[in-house]
Length: 437
Ligand code: DSN
Image (tube, rainbow, N blue to C red):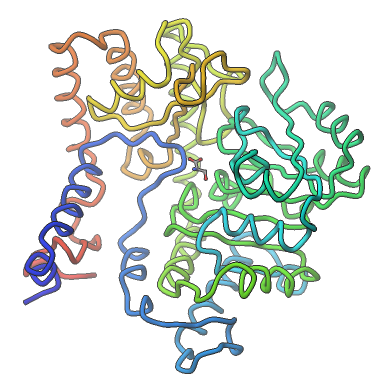
């Protein structure tokens, strides 16, 4: 009996939920800007025996025996992470243990701040992240957040406003980085502002980590004291977090993660992070990132042709936010009707949104996942047309049924995993004849 049959026999409900998730992935156009599809190699590591190992501590300094193999994997992950970003181990330190981006960020707060200290970060409603000072997140309850937004006219970061806020509030730490911002972030300007007030500069590059790795977004490492990221967005690895800091902060960062925040690291995920960093150094990864941006810019042009307003008037990266007000539809309704035809995305506030956060006037669109499944300009033009027709006919069941059929055909022509024998197939669903790797 192979793994597949074992799980199906033992836990049919979970095996079925995994199978259905595979079907959903194959049949849905995924425009969620923070998601991607990992490779067979990455999933081979996440489903490996390394899930069993307790390894509290760091390589060669563990609280458990038997860590020789996970030590090797963690050392490789740390070395590759620095290599990926062109950083020397003389100057920089990497921590690959954070279970998530939020925990990586929390470790940064623990390392650099005392409870109650002032931090200056991007407002969630303007495109920031929960951990950048949102009032009911740890960052907004244990610390004193001050928020910057975007310029009222350009909807781009307003460095004069950020500087004025920094001079007024004297934050101990300034955070650069965003979850829904489509323009280049000027890390040099952030450094200058931080220097004026003696603040730590913390860059959360989670969304753009893949673009930074291939040189399609300026690197923060020349300017930041500490940089965090997730590994599963444009970087296309397993779910998880990473931290890179100047060498002098390395021991404190490591201690903030363990024992400060976490116990045993997820060694199977650390091994998978190492695999993803190797993949990100392949020439094909640069081609992929180039296509991610081309696809986003092509979609922006197509939306504009159809009379949609794009927040900040365009994109330099993998995402953009569409203002739906001219089409008299809210983000919430758009998300629901698009989901019903097989397009997955999220409602998103536009700057100074008149609607509540659970309603919103916009949708956020990202191209990392569709680019991984092989969509190029021709297909993304088709996707914009499908979105527009869906929104314009949101109550016409006949049109919506036709659109659903077109989406199924498009998805079938660009499978994510299905039918690709070289790809790892989930042990829950593979059959006798399908081998792993
Ligand atoms: N929740 C992520 C996003 O969707 O952008 C950020 O961590």
